[in-house]
Length: 342
Image (cartoon, rainbow, N blue to C red; front, side, top):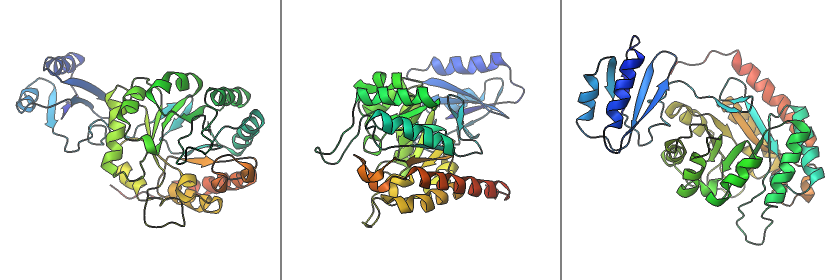
C-alpha cells in the first residue's frame, strides 16, 4: 500500500501519517520524496481497515494498494528512476556506466595494468573477483582477502571504485571494507541470509539475476535488500539457462525494458557471462545499451589465454577500447532519437 500526499500537504500532516502506520503492529512507513509528490509506502502485512483510515487523514490525496509482491522495488511505489551513486559515479542516469576488469584477481601486475587500461578507455568502475563461486570445486576459487587487498591497491593507483562479489553473510563486513559495491552473484540471488546482510550495509549492492529466475523472483531478491533499509540496489541481467548450448547462457535483452517498466531500479547488462565467447561480448553489449541498459559489466584481462578464470569470454585491452568507442556511439545516437511514451 502507498499513501500519496497532496501537493500542499504539510510536514506535520506527513508526520501524522507516519505515526499512524508505526502504531500498527508489524507495519513501518517508508517515505519517498518524489519530484511531484510525496509517497509513503506501508511495509508489512496490511490490515483491511488501514486504507480507509489513511484516506481520512488531513493531507492525504489517495491510498493505492500495490498489486506487486515486491513493494519498494516497484515503480508504483517509486515512479521516478532511481540513481545509485558509487562514489561520484551515477548509475541510472543518461550515460551508461561501464564496470570492467578480470573475472578473478590473480596478481598485482594483472590488476593494476587492467585497472589502468580500462580507466583509459572510459570505464568508471573496476570489477574483479576475490571470492569466486565455481561449478567445479577443483577450479580456481579466488585469492580471498589477498585478492581484496590487490583490488584496493588498484583503486589507489587509478581512483576507480571497486565492485566485487560477496558469497556469505560472514564475509560481508570484510568485503565491504575493501569495495564500493557488493555484488550478489547469480547463484546467490536467493540466498536470503546474504540478501539480509547486504541490506544492513547501506552500500550499493548489485543483484544479478539467477540462472532460472523470473522477473518477479529477481525483483523480490532486490526487495529483500531494500526491506533491510538499503535502497542502493542495481540489477544485473547476466543471461538465463535455456536449451541452447553454444552460448554459455541466453542473454535476455528484453529483461532490460521490462524491468525498467516494472521497477525504478537501475539495470545493467553482463554480456561476458551470458555469451561465454569474447567475440560475442561486443554485439550483445551494444544490444543491451540499445535496449536501455544503464551500464555494462565487462570482463577484461591482459592475456585472456592465460586467465585462471573465464579467459574465453574476456576482452583484451585493445578489444575493450574498441567496445567503449562503439558504446559511446550507440548511446549518442539514442540520445538524439525521441523516446516512445509509456
